[in-house]
Image (cartoon, rainbow, N blue to C red; front, side, top):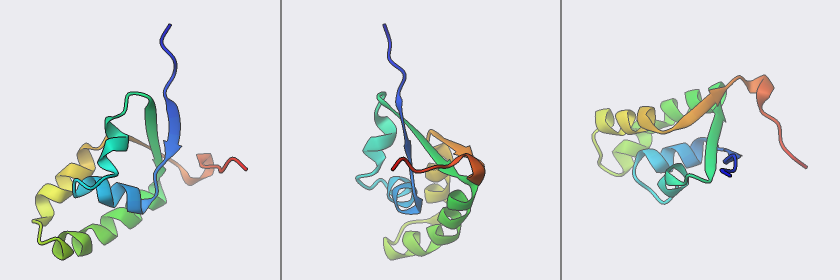
Length: 84
C-alpha cells in the first residue's frame, strides 16, 4: 500500500533557497512530501529572486527557470491554514 505524501507549506525563504540549489532543495526531492505554497508567497518569491540571484552572482534567467520547475502546488490564500 502506498501512503499519501505529507503536505508541507513552503514560505518564500524555502522557495528561494531551492531556486538557488540551497539545502531546501532536498524537500522537493522527497517522495514522502508534497509541497504547497500560496499565490501571495509565490509572488513575494518572484519579487525577491533577482536580489538573491545577484547576492550569489547567479544569472537571473536560470534561477527563475529553477523556481518555475519546482514541484510545488500553488493554492489560493484562502486554502492555506496553519495547524495549531
